[in-house]
Length: 108
Image (spheres, rainbow, N blue to C red):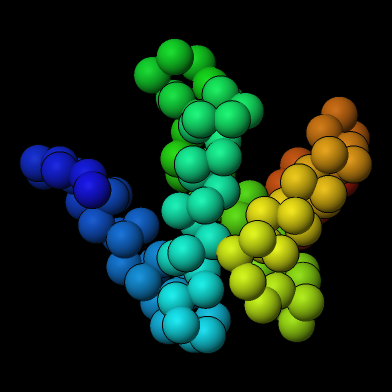
């Protein structure tokens, strides 16, 4: 749950994520995966908390959207999404590439 006041950006993000969830379908696979990955990042990896200089929720949503865009046919459960997330980003070239929801882009 997120309670905000006068934050249109948050509403726009919510609308985007809701549309993505409807496109993905499969009994809310996107939302269930997002909750699992957020929990893993916060409780296990301790990398989620923009107030403490760590990964922001918006950044994490971008990473998960990228995984769905690149590997959608292989993703059938939230655990498989988490495994693909960990596998892909463990081997990602963070120094040579930037990331978009459509995949990596070479840094200039």
